[in-house]
Amino acid sequence: MHGFTQGVITGISGGDFYQGFWAGSISSVVSSVTGGLNNATGLSGTAGDVSTMFFGTVSGGLSSEFTGGNFWQGAATGLTVSGLNHVAHKITYRNFVRERLEAIGLNWKDRPNFSVAEIDYLLDYDPTLNSMYEYADRPAIEIDPNQTAPGSTPISIKSIKAKTVGTMTFGTKAFRSYYTLYQSVGHELRHAYQIVSGIYANSLKINGGNLNKAIYSMEIDALWWNYSQNMNDLQFLKLASGYEKKLNLNLSK
Image 1 (cartoon, one colour):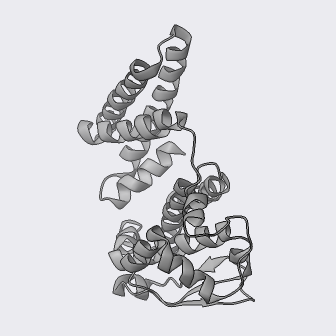
Image 2 (cartoon, rainbow, N blue to C red):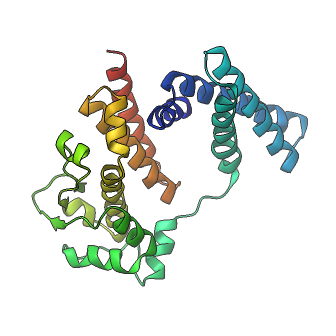
């Protein structure tokens, strides 16, 4: 997953997908092996972390150069993978959503009322969602009891190119708890920002105008945002993996 995700990120940012893929994949493997050797030889703490990051960085650079890419761009990818995906994984994960909800007087496990007012409260009083709402150009919000998905944001080639966001709609599944509501709202706001910022348009261009490929890429991005808010919640990784498989099948055609 590390290699594919780094490939997607590299491609969206204007680089070569496959060079990013191999740099991320090889760096991930080397970092894992290095971490195991560190444990076996008793190298721990800062020295062990530096060792893991060093070999991950160098392997990322070399793999990129071997596949015709830039050594330093590959090294940067390797550093990201080895540093963030391996060393940082030693940290005890925090549930940022729970902390933010408690900060505005809400219990993350409680069930909110099925109303737009509950969403407005989150947007008004939570600094993170409020900032995302502003960056997404304050899209309209509605609720629909018949909608099967927790949340949805209309996506079309026309709206992507015009950088305009339609009405975000939330169904009853989003209101199972304040936690699910927070994650659902954040997920859709991430999509809205992808549209207005031009990230979605860039993904569409990179994917040759194929809307499905662009959608899969942007879903992966939004799901990684969800995961970063509570890295104990693995459902978002599983969902992202499913979209990566779909994108991989489309890329091979």
